Image (cartoon, rainbow, N blue to C red; front, top):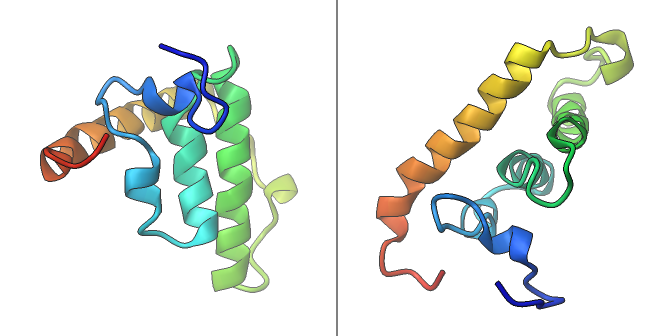
Amino acid sequence: MTKDPTNPDHYRSHPSGVECIQITEHMGFNLGNAIKYIWRAGLKSPDPAEDLRKARWYLDREIARLCPGAPAEAEMAPAPAEDITAVEGAAVRLAELAAPALDGADR
């Protein structure tokens, strides 16, 4: 893949061939960013757990927006490794489900 400052490799390297923005542009800011970090977990940096912590931060913000008074991230137990693996698997499944709907779309 080539160097492109506006559309870097990690934007286009998901196994589904679908770009994350094709899904997230239909969501609100917090949920879109959470999906973005889940979608690209481990593609931009070698630490997928860091990407998933960023996703959790956006999810916590969305929960706080929807449910004022909900516990903050610091009050919640950290996710076990098997949960992180499940989230990564869910992102791949989401892309697989979205791919047929995006066939013929500009990728």
